Length: 149
Image 1 (cartoon, helix red, strand yellow):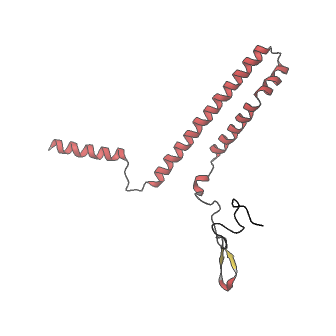
Image 2 (tube, helix red, strand yellow):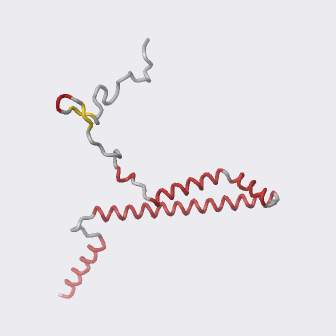
Image 3 (spheres, one colour):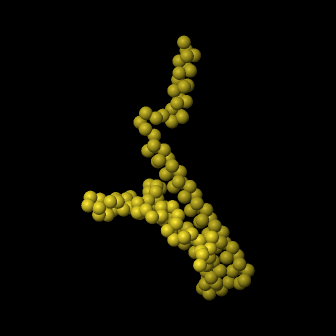
């Protein structure tokens, strides 16, 4: 029985027949584990701050509330007698509030990313590096000196 052409044979593919990279031969031909970083790849990009965690939770709650908007308005209708028009208006206003809250979360995400990028730029710049504003100021000072002479 032959295998279909769309399925690969067992063991085929990249790295077939090799030992996993986390294993290496030690003295005495025993396998020993190599120390690997706890987060593979670019681990520094995966760090979640408290602000990020709160934003994730907030967006999850907003998303869940947006899925349950009709049920929430029906529940509100049992507490406070609402006509159909009032219930429709309340549902629309509830959706608008959720939309605005979602937008505020997105603005907060942009601030988090901007702050992270700014911090990364400051870390990457060495003590001898100057930013463009400093370079422009030096060029202007040099031109002013040339104009005075």
